[in-house]
Amino acid sequence: MNLSEIFCQDKAVNSLQRAYACGRLPHAYIFAGADGVGKFCTAGTWSKLLLCYSPIIKDNFADSCGKCESCRCFEGDSHPDFHHIYKELIKFVKDAQKRKRQPVDLPIDVIREFLIDKVQTKPALSAAKVFIVSEAEKLNAASQNALLKVLEEPPAASFIILLCTKLDNLLPTTRSRCQIVRFGPLDEEKIIAHLVQAGINKNEAKFWARFTGGSIGQAQMLSAIEPSFYEIKKEFLKRICRCQLADSVDIAQWINSTASKLTESWMKIKNDTSKADIGRQIKKIFVQMVISSLDDAMKQLKAEKMINFDQAGQIQAIEQNRGAENCAKLIEDCFTAGRFIDASVNEKLVFERLLINFANSAMITN
Ligand SMILES: [Zn+2]
Image (tube, rainbow, N blue to C red; front, top):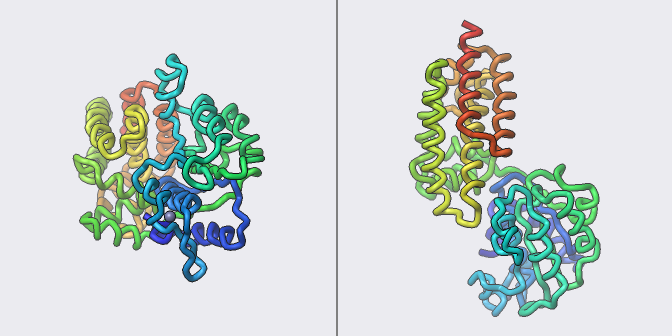
């Protein structure tokens, strides 16, 4: 893949191109934007260009040649000057004790061993070295402080790109040392067209485009998992819509067993993330599904405008049984549930508690 093939992120790509054209390339970047809007793809193709022996410039647009030794190594995932830093690298640090940890933050040992130590060495194949740091919003204060010096004075032949979904999580000292490139959400119609072309049913494509807030990467991922996550969401919404107090334990168990199956499937598609992390992400998607239905209900939108436009009847029932105010309170409960999942609190209880509140809120209105 080349830079010119990046999907619908012209603004971000053009800002990189402008710097390239005037030969004033920053050595530290933050690519900021939601998950799945193309930050990693852009960072990869940008790296390929920075490492390429003979970039091609056509109509003021620079791109990698795709033919030189550097480009061939890059495409073969074996470029010695390209480094992808992510928290699961903790499994490979020198200290055997630390390898056993399940990382939640981006550990300082990973930053030290795989970035700071390596950035000082000379490139092996190209004229530069590139480091992409995934989930930079998870860099804890210690890791960010360790990085500061490198960000401030990166060795001449190195580039560091931090990929970040929440800019606020980075310290002002980190932000001020990097060029920030923003990645906006993608246009809904373009995502739908892209997914439909890949064989996804139109209703499903539209739901994922809206549910992910314009993230093509996430929409592709969620529509690729087996068993169909879309069918599961429809079943889930039906269940929670008619959820009575007595059903909450059953539904919580159903969520947990379904989440395990989805986790197994996701692992097969995306194997650079730990099972525990994927499990948490899937459970947070279930919470997000509850939020999307409450949000649709609370706003009393016309069916066509809803995220859950395909289950408008159920959304209206949620609103009629609770009212907008109770829906808003339940959304707060959902955010709490999300925080509990992040903190690895017993997830079965997290969903039970959420569903009990959900069932109770209907009784209050009745
Ligand atoms: Zn090349």
